[in-house]
Structure formats: C-alpha cells, structure tokens
Image 1 (cartoon, rainbow, N blue to C red):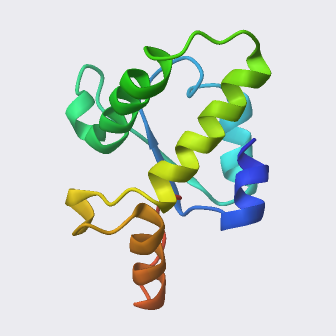
Image 2: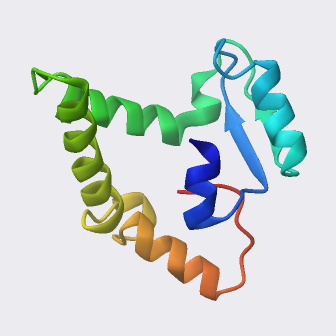
Length: 119
C-alpha cells in the first residue's frame, strides 16, 4: 500500500505514528530503511502529539463509519475513496488558511518546502 501511494506522491522523508502493533512491525521498519524514510513514534498516551491524524480519524469516523452500513468491503472502499478525494481536493480546511489539503500541498511544493508527509 505504501509503495502504491509513493508511486503517486513520492516517498516521504518521515512518517509519524503512534505505537500500535501495526506500526511497530519488522516489515514496516525494513520498508522504511529500504526507502530512506524515517519512522517517528509519538510518546505512548500522548495522542495530541499526532493531533492532525487524530482529527482526521475522528472526522472519518463521524462522517463515514458512523453514517454508513456497508454491505461489502468493496462498498466501504469506494465510499472511503470518494470521501478522501473530497476531503483532500474539495473541502477547504480552516487550519490551512481555507485551502484544501491538495492546494496547500501544491502551494508548499512550489514554495520549495520539503515534504515530510503525504497530506
């Protein structure tokens, strides 16, 4: 999955994450080393150190997971893909000076700011 994302956006300099079992695997550590991606872990019990993704997860849960009753995994994926596209490309975010995340990414890319995350 990470390689597919990187094919579209390039490899990040760093990934910041919590200490969940899905993030402390040997496979992820090897992938990161192969692609020169730094893994940064927040302190246990400190979700505010990763506030942006915590907010994203809360919004996703409220607008998608709590709203829909999926009949199939494919249906969940399709609805999620549409929602992520809207979230990143159509919905202005107050924290980004009312730009969409995509507009913000393009603006920062053009300004020469190095990427340290995909979104």
